[in-house]
Length: 294
Image (cartoon, rainbow, N blue to C red; front, side, top):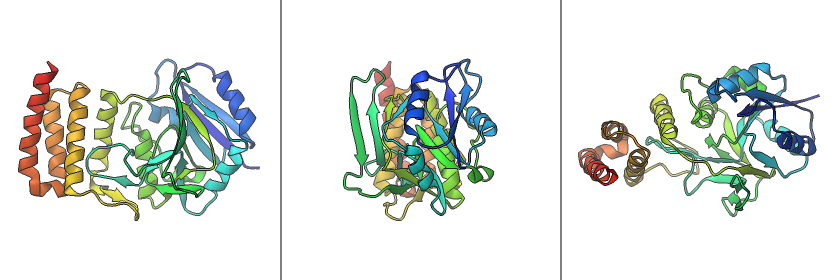
């Protein structure tokens, strides 16, 4: 019978007992746990997941963080139903249907999310389900968040985690784009409740990875689902200034900031009309922000 392989890149030498018990109590399907011990920081997450995949045997692959808690019973059965739909690529619990030319995450006003978000100490918990009026079991997206990524094993002959990127960020966005680019449809699921005990912090390394990713995919971007509005000149300019602020606040040097912002301003077709004005304004803001940082 069919089996789910749960692949975990772990900070611990052994699987977390609480995680193992929760999966055992709720999955309701045949499964194996492929624990990749990364306590010594031996692997990037790309390497860890490829290594875990090579050890796995299930028809369904589920790359999942260990700081989660499943609230739905028999969620494994529901997951297999989602992955048995025609042309399905990757499924998860949060994502978005647009990718602009300017480096950005899947999060925007039209994001698709179905997750219970908590901090590590469980002091604050909120259930987020967006769009708020959505009634279906799944919603199509392009990008997915890496807290949970599930796919059919046969997809692994077409896509794999790109070890050239390295580090611990953007693996989710990259693998999502690979599936989308190969003609598959990615989805956020709404009939499984999962809790994630992390707020996350986007450090300098996150933005280094993000820039790397958008540079890798530059010839295939922008990408939008049919129900998404393409980015306007105003959107691109706003995203550019948001990126500028993030790079400055995360400790990039003045030279790095000027170089990256200029590069992405020139790359964005909609900014090209404004290009000189935008770049001049951006450089003015860079100098201003750096004078405040000191």
